[in-house]
Image (cartoon, rainbow, N blue to C red; front, side, top):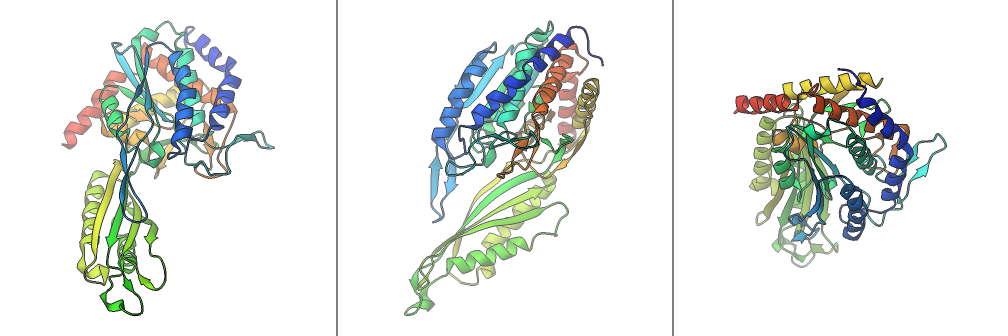
Length: 424
């Protein structure tokens, strides 16, 4: 693999636009787009759409299904998500790439963390600058430059920008699965890890559950015995769930919240236990699903007869093992990085993202092609400005090597499918 004379102008074009890549990401970050801030998400969608439309192909909005949320009182409510954006370019080309990103962030409209600033050390500090409005700018910058390459017609791509990744992609998951089946290679733009910019190798799978405990209200003084304390039952369930930690290698259960109760002189009749599970493989996912069912249906756990438990949720991100197809893809990306004097390393991650969904759909993918940054999901989130052009050049070079065949996309997909069939 080498940088050809045809490749160099594309890389130079990325470098020439380094400041633009940063500036537009900073502007996007000034629009709050927390996953539940529908107005802010719609405004972000409107800001992104013309950038996609400037590329060739067809850009359209994709309506997503509603998702369910469980309120603190245990009631199940519907939530309407804004549209996803889908750009389709050259769907007839021999090599197909699926590129994904999300325009939602973890910061609600009420957050004080609303704009990007430049720290004294020159590092960008702001909401979504790494995760992942910076990554979206990098992705689009690579595509804008790649369209100037003479072999561009050999590669088609589909770009999906979704509004719900930070809450597990409950609405966009079917679209991710559909696109994953259409591609040879996937490229997702979560931030690379740390100053060194490590890529995520294997990823655990993730499930979010909400156990709604229902009891019977009563006066705590006059009629305590007739009450059925839902909060006490929720506490027992939470304790039993926590006790599952350490029972199976790599499986963790985090009880994140218990909601319920009210006045101290009333036996509470509603409570909700919210918990997250991470697993390393499909067998572990089956095991923990069975254990969760056992816990929430166990009569002795509640301590009080007459309580009922309704379980909502489940796995939204399947495990993403570092299989032979992933290894082959990462080896090629490492080669491409070396041509740019970038040392590409990878390490396992307990985090999850759209790369999990794409892998489950049979698509080998690298999902941390975004900017180098850190402290994501906190008010210390930051990104290194030099990494915008750096990472856009890496993506552009990957696309060029897919076009030249030096990275064999169809062979990578065939290897991934053979592994799936072998496991079956």
